[in-house]
Image (tube, rainbow, N blue to C red; front, side, top):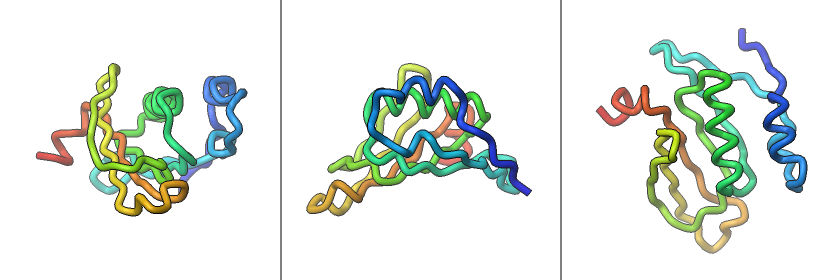
Length: 116
């Protein structure tokens, strides 16, 4: 059974000035049979600040793969963050970016297991 954990204080303080509910939720990372710790998050529009906070959440909860939804990104591309996470964005519905866009944030330690 998954244990729902409260969001750490650094997340709440980082987003105290943002008008977003996505960082006030509790969530439960799931450990797959392969041992990879996975979770999902509706980010309601990704920003640089949210990406930094999400990688901090991943480190805090030892999440190797975070699936993000509603990124509002209007393109498909990938990048690597300064702290070593790989980010993959995809969007096919550019006519309605306010409810579209998905992505994955993958820890460096896990990338070879996924891309292999």
